[in-house]
Each structure stands twice: as structure tokens, then as C-alpha cells.
Image 1 (cartoon, protein in one colour):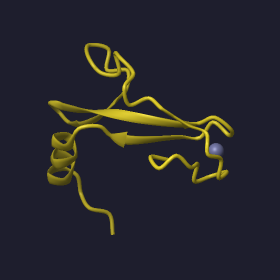
Image 2 (cartoon, protein in one colour; image 1 turned 90 degrees about the vertical axis):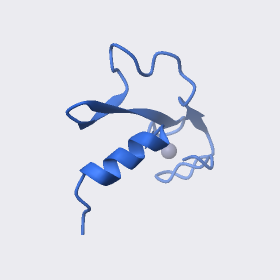
Image 3 (cartoon, protein in one colour; image 1 turned 45 degrees about the vertical axis):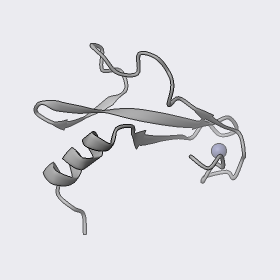
Image 4 (cartoon, protein in one colour; image 1 turned 180 degrees about the vertical axis):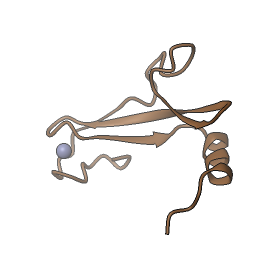
Length: 74
Ligand SMILES: [Zn+2]
């Protein structure tokens, strides 16, 4: 998605929500819980053709926290 191509339908019409204002903050409208005291902000990418949504952890420190706190899947 980040490279501009939809992995589902192959369309090259991807819209980035990375710079949407209010994606974090008091309403936590675009976060996932990482631990009891931490929520990670997400960057969303949407395909303009099929509507597929892909989310990425926006901040490196949140990704680092997840790697410390969450179990690795085998
Ligand atoms: Zn698509």
C-alpha cells in the first residue's frame, strides 16, 4: 500500500491518511491498545477501487513497545 499499489485488486489508486489531523488525541479514534498505558497511533491507507484498508504503526517508539510487550507469533 505504501508503494501506491493495492495488494488485493492491484489498483494504483491509494489514498494516505498518514497526515490526517486528529488521528490521535483524546478520542483515540485511530489507535490500537499496545499495553495498559500505551496506545499506538495508526497510519491508514485506503484503496480507491476496492476500499481495502491497510494500517501501519505510525511511530517507531510504539512499534518498539509492541516488540517488547507482545508475543511473537510462530
Ligand atoms: Zn484495491
